[in-house]
Length: 426
Image 1 (tube, rainbow, N blue to C red):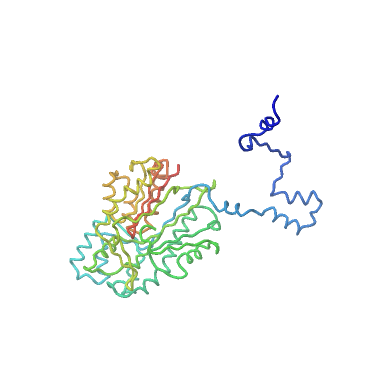
Image 2 (cartoon, rainbow, N blue to C red):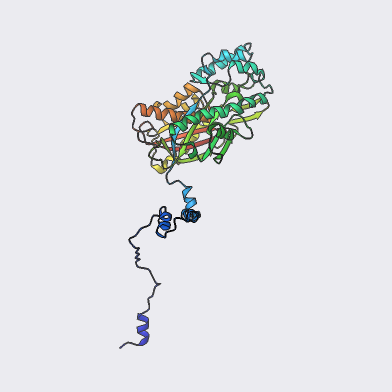
């Protein structure tokens, strides 16, 4: 015999009430919400109530705030869908450029400086460059040729027109390769180191391309080599022996624009090229003043310290470890390379520091040779060159037959941009 108290205790659990299982059920008849308005008004003999039917259709299409947010988010990684590049028609031969440059700037009497400049051009590893400024334009604008002559108005008048035009050419090629309607473009991000105007080049390009007025625009100016497109009209000027780093720029810089279509979750009709897996931006320690640019009455002036290649090569391994350690990669010859070709000295020192095989920088050196330093547009020219050669040579992926790669941009700050790329099988 047990007491009532014991019976009560036996009926009580020690722990909290717990759901052990769940079962649900629905009738077999499944209704598609998209076709339900037609069905509902037909089955209720109400098809004559057309206005009410339209209201009901709109109710059926209503979504929650959460659904709207989710619709704006991509599931997969950011993906390069297409690449387009463009240069001005004026092509400059590097071997004859010193003679041309000193003649057009009325500086032929500066014979020693001209010899220095010739050596700079010879060591640049550049064969040719493209420049908007041709002889005719320079003769019409003599203030642009004189060293430190007030010329900002003349330069601005050129670049605010020419930068969007060159951008349009590159973007049109990318859109054509992409093969989708322009109306699907949701964002326009425009970067240039040439010219500042209101409304900016992003607005002008939106109009030139005929994009939707509601496209979301982002404009970035003066990011140098780590952000695009450049027009050397803002940096061209005559030589001087008191500002030799200006001569370095005259020996290296060229004009070019590049555009990429970025998206996610590619449709069957789209042909993805690379995935952007991870990005970082780092200001290198003890690098203040290594690369400076200042917009003045005389245009955009650049100042470069001699140790820029050393600063980059000294810090590049740390950036690579941060980027690739999570992927278990420590052999940097096992990845493909897209590096901004600031100049041959930077590439040489990075190769030496990391023990890279010569072929790792082949695409980078090719773009430097054929186009010069086009600022931030360079890395996209290299990306375009790599995917084309990889497909042409049947290497299996867009990244020289390899799965993983790195894109490096180097610019004012001294700032290093790192992007981990994943190639696509072709």
